[in-house]
Image (tube, rainbow, N blue to C red; front, side, top):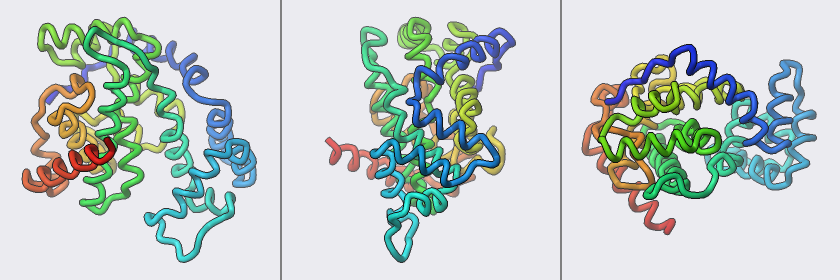
Length: 286
C-alpha cells in the first residue's frame, strides 16, 4: 500500500497559495454564500433558506434528500426550513458538494491516454461502490456516496491549477511504474491527499469527509472515529481500479488493506459480492 508522502514547508506554502484563489474559481455564488453563513455560529435556518431559495435546483435536491427512504419520515416534508433543520449543517454541506462537484472536474485532455472524464468516471465508480458497501455494513449511504465522490478532490483541483504537473506525473507513472503519490510529490511538492484535505478544511466540511480525502490510501491512519468511512472508500477505490473504471493510476496496488477488511468485518467473499453489484449497477447505468 502506498504511504502518504510527507509534505515539506514549501509544499504547504504552495497549497496555501492555491487555495487563496481556487474557491472563487470552483464554487458558484450561492454555494459560497451558504458556506459563509454556515461559518457564523449565530446563523439561522431562515438565513440559509433565503439563500437556498435563490437556486431552484438546489431547493429540489434538498427536499428530495429529506423525503428519501433514508430519512424514513412518516409524512412528506414540503417546507424548506423544515428540510434544512432535518438535514443539519453537515447534511446541507454534503448536498452542496455533491451538487457542485461536476464543476470541479474540468473537461479536456490531460495526457495522450488520459482525459478529465476518466478521473470523473473513477470518482463516480468509487461513490457507487461506497454506497453499496455502506448499505451492506449498515452505515449512512448518502454520506458514503459523497465521500467516495470527493475522495480524489485534490486530483480534480490539480487538473484546474496544476494540469501540466499532473500530466507529467501520470506520464511518469505509466512509463516508469513508480508510485503515483511519490511522483506527484516530486512534481508538485505535495500530493492530492494534501490538497484535498486542505480544501475540505478551508470549506469547513465535516471531519469525516476531511479524513476520507486525507486517508483513503491508508485508512487505518485516519482518526479512529473516521476509520470506518475511510476504510469503505479505500475498498471502493481499489474495486474501481480492479475493474478498470476510469483512470485508476492513483490507486497503486490493487490489494485491499487486510487490516481495514478485518476492521470492517469483511472477507473476500463479501467484497466479491460488492464488486459484482458495482459492475451490475454501472452496466445498467450505461
